[in-house]
Length: 296
Image (tube, rainbow, N blue to C red; front, side, top):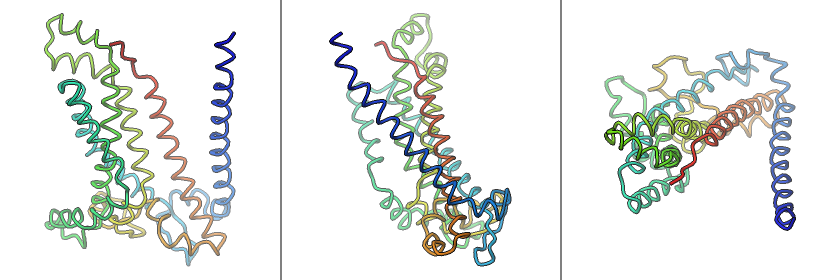
């Protein structure tokens, strides 16, 4: 009885604050839906599929910005995934415990660097390197979707690495010992036993990293070029572009406030971004809960 009594306030506060968070999220979504209704009535599904954004002509097509967001996120994930998972395998399976902790702390320190600092480093160094690397393709500048993707890869690397490391360490040590006892080498044990069992946690790490990449604003804003109405082709990756976050972080948000239709279009971009980020994060969190629990 005493244990249950002591646990009741904790359980009550847990449910209360969880309910408060859910209610806040639901209220935010409802507000975004309500504020964006004018543009849905004006454009219909053309708001999602339209390729032209001219607010003075009351044309609002979000597809180029959705395309830019997807391209930047895919580039970031494609670069961060092999490095992050490889680093996690190295720390979890090869390094001794003390060195593993030191390495993990050093990588996690990258997550504490403000995004504006990453953006400034991108302006100072990364976009010049990208411009020189793309010289055979005659780019106009180094402010491209590719630049933003590379910068985001560095920013999401700590998330991918640390969560992948946790997933790998969550595989019971007894299964590693059993595999080695059957004559498997360390590499065969990792590939045949550890990785398959840690796969849900690794996928969760990638999805949570993707969620951060989708929602990053300042760093992307500084290096993406902010070019509206870009073409929907692979060539666009090495050209200036626009993402949902760079559009929302620009001056047009302030310009739109006095025009109900324009404001609804901007809020609609926020709704698309919110829905995508929440969906990816929830799936990643659900997969993270399914990873095995270490028993040794």
